[in-house]
Image (cartoon, rainbow, N blue to C red):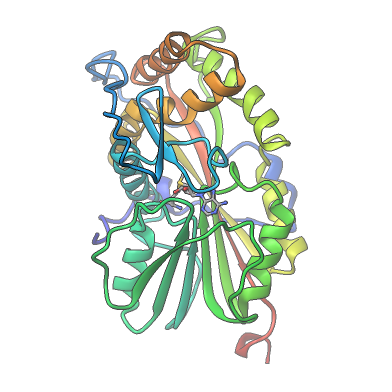
Length: 353
Ligand SMILES: C[S@@+](CC[C@H](N)C(=O)[O-])C[C@H]1O[C@@H](n2cnc3c(N)ncnc32)[C@H](O)[C@@H]1O
């Protein structure tokens, strides 16, 4: 879990977008990324792994569907699987975040934090990293799914809880509340941010990390009617129905975090490449992990929405996911997603004295 080498200037040193500027709506301003011309066309050997998981009637905690395993507690609330394939993907996505943040587990400038909450902790990989980074802190990770390790650091524990319930933590309690890749599952985003604000200590921080689930390309190498475009169009159409809103843009996230009461809100903008197409070595490394991510990621994100809501057969949905994974692996298509690390401080505490 140790941090990887520092990211290149292009990956890690772009200035944060200040909340007060309108830069938030502008395209990401890292410039056009130079593509490496030396690779084979496809960085992916085969399509998405669609191996099925065997069903056991003794497993009461899970729902099995389309060869994937989903959470049973509050069944259907979160449309991504929680099986081992997905747990591996979450862990490598954590590594992409570390690489994107220059090896840091957070952009929040916390000093010696003593209480840390990681909401929707997944496999608990960020919480474990936080517990290792700050051994004197108590770190708590919560999730709908019981997929966290039973072995943890002594200062880290996990709880099964719905983040949309009313939180029972004391007010003004945590030095840092971390929330990553949760916007697609939380229905009442304002209430969620309000609870994060209430339970953050005055002077403490929140970091909200979100990926914008759409495909971007700056040099025209993405075919307009290709498999990636089709996948993201369909996914966004269905996600809007499932979650009752369009996914927020960066300036909307910033606005919402400010509206909750946080100040000094900054957004650190990064790119997640779908394959190792960039020439820059650190960006290429992010692309290598990005390629691993999409090998199962399109399937994880797509199957429940496409079949439960989109009326597709399993075969149609699988084909759409596989086609996107194959296109994403084509290093001639210079594509990326956007990741935003949004940090805010709760007023009060020694900084305001
Ligand atoms: C995409 S994963 C991200 C995991 C982790 N935050 C990370 O970045 O490594 C989203 C996680 O949020 C959890 N989740 C979704 N809705 C939730 C809710 N209402 N309350 C608690 N956890 C939730 C899911 O079970 C899943 O583990």
